[in-house]
Image 1 (cartoon, rainbow, N blue to C red):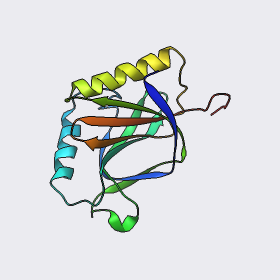
Image 2: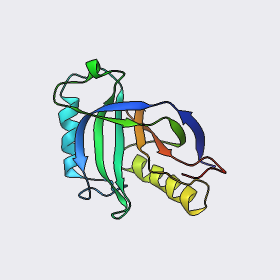
Image 3: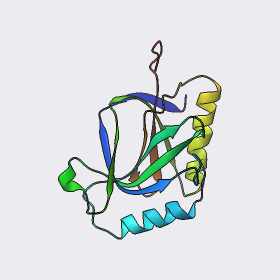
Length: 151
């Protein structure tokens, strides 16, 4: 098993939005995404870098919004002009990869696709979360059903 099942508390991320279906989930290179990250990194922010995927649209099989930015513990910590999104408390599959972009993302999605194809996880799409413990590592949390639980 290349992932861990963890329980996470509610997580808030503030930053700039990138809209889908322009950027399909799992796509490695996207100009709008790169521009959003560049803009965020030029500003002051109060928390560790993070990203949230929200507003899943089953008809498109993609996320409608990705907020790229930073974790925040309160609205007082949000930089003016940034949006705030929330991932609810719940059970998550945590996938981790270390390396350089874009290979690090490809490694993550290889792990995720394997887990889904082999029915090791059942995603709920309640909101997914990425954090970056250091420049070469990504931890990606996917909301999942607990074994024996229905979404």
